[in-house]
Image (cartoon, rainbow, N blue to C red; front, side):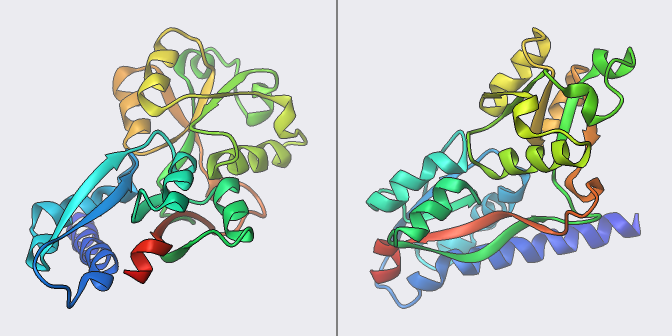
Length: 240
């Protein structure tokens, strides 16, 4: 019970932090301002919705125009074009390539990390494969189909590190790119063998009885804390 209370308190602190980070550029603006925000269906973004529900944005004269994306990587073109002002997404090859090309946006805050005891992302494996003993370690996934949200995202990197730990490479598994709801269906039809997921989707897999939590980044030897989630401002938003 005490742990639940502490966790709830920390969660509210995160919500307040997210609200302030998003709103700082808006302080001092006249009247109401609409902020276009790119969202993902991930537990690390829950604080944004807590801030909306509790009226933190409204108190600052800000209305949030939220658009959902299948992956953070798919938000990058919209950020570059200025169609999105704020992204609550994650690190990806596309993001870093855009930064290297001096794209007009900036990472302004941490939104989530893979570190011991605080991970919110994990590899889930089809329940029948685990129950039957066909998959006991990541090595048993060689040649099998693993779903991630998008090519070159942080999930791609983490699956690669899990493969390296057991002497494999990312090329030893078959990657497929599916959004989270489609992964549920793919598990049910046995179209995939595993998926790298973020909560609440791992919980959804478990509820449906289609997949089980198999491995988390903090269990990978030699892999320190990894920056997973980030908050990004477009150049247009920073300058306005």
